[in-house]
Amino acid sequence: MRAQLEIFTLNFFQHELLIALREWLALEFNLHSLESSFSFSLDESFDPARRQYHATRIWEQVLKARQGSHHKLLVITEYDLFIPVLTFVFGEAQLGGRAGIVSICRLLESFYGLVPNQDLLFQRLCKEVVHELGHLYGLRHCYMPSCVMGPSTTVERVDAKEWKFCPECLETFARAREDLAMKLSHTPPKKR
Ligand SMILES: [Zn+2]
Ligand SMILES: [Zn+2]
Image (cartoon, rainbow, N blue to C red):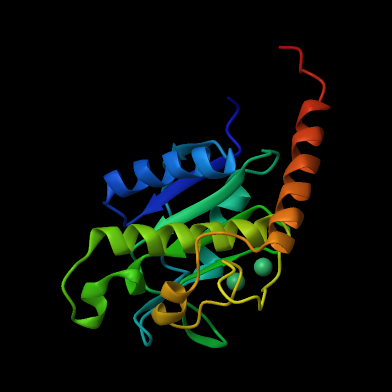
């Protein structure tokens, strides 16, 4: 099966979680992924005053490095992320684009001084990854209660959402995926 998603880890050491995530994406969304390594330069993305990393400046690096590839590109990190207009973000992705990022920093119970909970962390990670994938496939925020495309402003909001798209978002997502599949299958094979 041809991979559609390339996953890059940055300061992320929960390999079992990543394997489970990839299996789940394949099973639930027929979205096949591969893991890639990349040496990120963090000088441009780390903000010493905020002690956080600029989300956009991280995913831009893989986007630049993978020009000409059809894969969606997703960075998963434990670094705390921000974009200038917000105190923090759980993730960020290009709308209808190719690259995005998800951070587990604030999905960890330990961030809030609570006892670690791997099951809860996995659920949260899946939701945030699907949310950012939704953006990559052109979905905007959705205000249907429980839809995974609801904005994630707090971890409580993340927990309140489901890991699934509402029917309308699912239709848009499926349509975008079909377009992609057609584009891929109509790419003439290259002569070596
Ligand atoms: Zn969003
Ligand atoms: Zn929705």
